Image 1 (cartoon, rainbow, N blue to C red):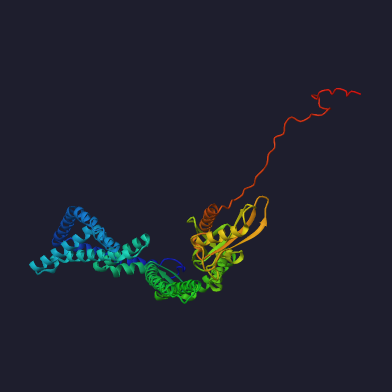
Image 2 (image 1 turned 90 degrees about the horizontal axis):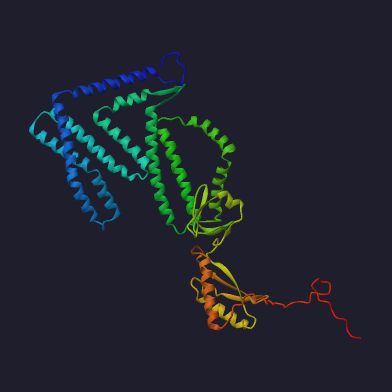
Length: 457
């Protein structure tokens, strides 16, 4: 930076010097391409590209037909074969380029006559390897970003332009006192942090799989352990990545204070849900697999998140309930301490049916219904004498509430219907007696009333 220029601005002198050095390197490299031998090699490379395209047009249909016939292959093998077919032109070009390079090396002792072909073949091979390696990244946008970044890096590296380009990026910098931030430092920080985050994610997924198989740990504690491990690994990856490229972490103290103020004013609900999620995991009030009722929502817990709980209902809907609602609201946990759930069914029978027989038939029918536990026998009691029937309640137990409650109730009702029909038990319904009266005497005051004759004395 020039003397007297205020801080916080681009350093123009190093930047211009870096630009001039980069342009000089590009000019020098371009001059080497003007030689007759290089023109000949460029023509050969163009011809190899045309031959690779023609070979792809000839071989691709047959290879695709051959791949369609391999239906019994595992999915990973089919994906790899399809990826090879999609990169067929690049593969053919690399094979042809290296073959041409080898033939020229055997026919002429001058390295300059095969130099450009070797450089292009090397770059094409590196690009092809990067294309295959980045398929492991599932996110399409991230995979595209990493692919293009790796292609640029390998191209500059093999062309010998990596150092001038790095100097150029290092010249694009902002300074403020002792703090200096350059474009090269930002790129290095992103790359190092990205690699560390990817490694932390791989470790977290591996640990999650291992912890998930530990049956001696409760489900809620497994989720809590995984969350703590993920936060620790990702936080360590972030700070180690910044420290590795020379960032002064003490400067983040002010930022953390500002973030704390922001949390206090604008992110109260977010923080409340995060803290509530930790409390839920610690007190084990709900855990994955529990069947809960919260208001009109009835379903089982699919996952415990940092901000919400995923509840899946029987109709396939997935409700994302904030953790704070589970802490402050009334939640019915059907399987908190065990999986046993008792269900009640109300029905009625006629007064002329024997109540002892009705109870026996109801209990026997319920025991034969699917999903009803035999270890906890059903019971049937009289609960009242109604206007049209004797009222009963039938109670039974199930151990799989995640399979639904309405369907098991329907199965028990159907079993009662069949048993009562076979046993001669009638299911009453309200009956009303309607009487139709004839013409009534309108009375003497009615205008249409006939005059009465006087009684004889």
